[in-house]
Length: 132
Image (cartoon, rainbow, N blue to C red):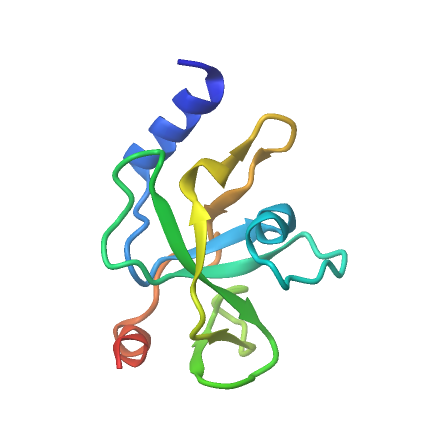
């Protein structure tokens, strides 16, 4: 088992990827996996897991919504993605993208998908909105 496999196995064992968890996903991951994604020089975007079951193997797929500051179409608003004091809302359009769990680590760049440091999970009310 190489370093990447060991890292991903440890991350998988320690990480909850279930529905309603929030992630910081580096720009390169979105560019690799989202056909119409436009690189605007950002470091990354918040992602929201909408899979019906958590990842169990490093070959599994995480279904993520991309967070944006612009409300467009149907989706949900989530507050606090950038800190508890943040009044800024993040909009998640209801269009899931299939991101391989193996993209969580890159040999050159290191961690590519990490738990969102400011808010790890939706509130009960936000999760109800997501499940509607």
